[in-house]
Length: 84
Image (cartoon, rainbow, N blue to C red):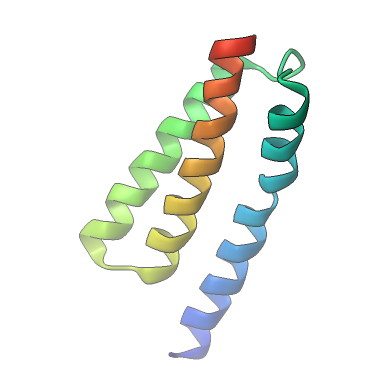
């Protein structure tokens, strides 16, 4: 792997892991009242688009980061829709 790919993977790791505490909090409390539904919808849609883009161009850091982050934000969105 090139240094640029490693840099991309490190950035992907940081931005992806940042959502983990929110998922855990939503899971434990079943509360997402302080989260904006429009923000979650736009963010989740954007992550899906980045994932598709990364797959089209074959960019491993984009695919990895956006796959995991899409799953995490999708989980938060699920709790928002289910528990408000």
